[in-house]
Image (cartoon, rainbow, N blue to C red; front, side, top):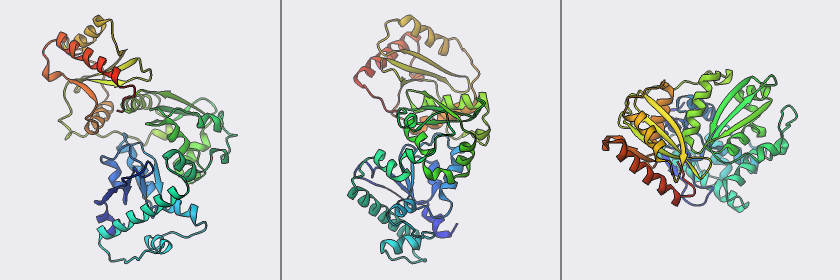
Length: 361
């Protein structure tokens, strides 16, 4: 990696107009491990950026975003063009390029190249991420689905909700477990023509036979469920994944109740958290009539010193997610003294959910 590319990692820009443009423009994938989860990302595609990005995912398991390469977009418009260096992209677009430019100038030119791509997409009538996916990956029906127990229609009709997907071989052995903020988008990416070139995806395609999904109400629930299932089944293609402790993230480690959406809008998911001791998930109605059950859950979790087998990986996933999602509804247990007070606050929060048919967390 050149000195200029390393220095350019600190520079970022976000496209600010249009649904296709709501992306974080990334010169180097090392920034992906920071605070840009959920945004589509575009890289220039020079070198081993995409491979490096994927290698970061085991250490930042919360990340789930579509990735687009500028070189691939340009190849769609200029078939047969050779784009091996940054100067090749500049030459193709008629931009000047000097090897000794400062990192900021290099990155600003990259943003200019990306804005060219956005304008070209708009001229072709591509104004949504779904339309961009079809243009970028190619139609699903170009793929050969004959080796699988499902077809293109199954993939096309998958829900756009968060969840976990399980891939099995022809002997019903689980080979891979993953999670997604958008199951449809994530799974479609496995069946693009270009996915055949990725070594990890090649391994999946060779062994894959059947695919099942489990929807969740939120990304956090999908993250925790994915980790639990990986720990339980140890899929061979997941074995390179590990969740590292981040002891410096202390400010999020306090007792609380998280109020999360559920896949059924009439219900809500409650997550009771005590650092190092308890992660307990319960499901209740948004307009609860049985306060006795809620009172019992609260008392057992916070007032009787109940303990459970809390996996270190799950706690780190939770803390990592909380670090980036401060807007989640929650009750800070440091501010309450009795189970009755907690119950009153919890019922108020659950009632407040009625005003939000869709909750993004």
